[in-house]
Length: 354
Ligand SMILES: Cc1ncc(COP(=O)(O)O)c(C=O)c1O
Image 1 (spheres, protein in one colour):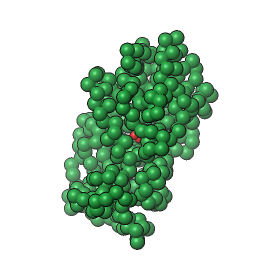
Image 2 (cartoon, rainbow, N blue to C red; image 1 turned 135 degrees about the vertical axis):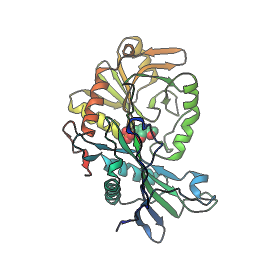
Image 3 (cartoon, helix red, strand yellow; image 1 turned 180 degrees about the horizontal axis):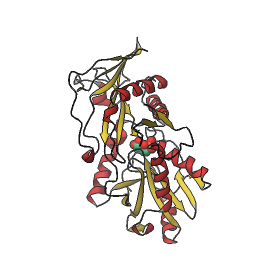
Image 4 (cartoon, rainbow, N blue to C red; image 1 turned 30 degrees about the horizontal axis):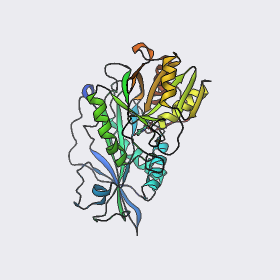
């Protein structure tokens, strides 16, 4: 498919790289592509970044038929721009599409389009340490129609957003609250898809946790409220008596790319790494017997997020004496070193852009 580019008449001033924050500033251009039943995915194009005008009946607004992704472009010390496992993001997006009845797109073509967009926008990839250009591919149901069915038309867009260091004040453990009432996802539902409704469903519990002084929610399974699933919008790892455990992917957990990266590196380092069910009772017991060595979340935004305290009803588990554990530190350093080109990429994860 031929990609066309429409140039902007005027470019925006670049923001101050020292105060970028997250998710507030957007670049000059975006990628757009449309789907209709007759034409399939068509008209891929790079255009000036602009608001999307929607008919009030547009299906995504009513029925939430939409998916998205999140990945980053990194600038290396030599000034080159590179991506980390972008093929996995587009593969997961198509998997989300399957779950949401959205037609699949060509993953290789999407990656080429993303690279073109990044080449055009390369000045927007910040240079300050640990900053990056966040990439948000999105697909939404575009039919102006009221009635529950899959849409016949869709829009695929990619927008870019320069983001600051996730840990401007340093890498510190956070407190998390185990959620006993609300659930994020259930087996047979949409938990494995990166889709709008999952995030809407997480808001109330997130708000309650924040009000109680906790940074994130620790989600339990939706059936027994017993087995650990995810933390906030991240996957979770426990180091218990030398075993690195993460919940197995059983239908309601997002297949995190950072999760897979941690698993692959951990195995390469010779750690005992297990994907299995892990109950909150097991974590409590490990905490009480001094066997709970480390807990951390994994995700694109934070990479690794160390957990220093877990609260479950009246129980409080403190982990690591307020300090970041050596394993969390090692994963964080290794993954970010690969992403920023400071360390060799052992697995072919890096895709160069410039
Ligand atoms: C619900 C949820 N779980 C886990 C993750 C971590 O996935 P990844 O490592 O691919 O960013 C994310 C972020 O994408 C998420 O939204």
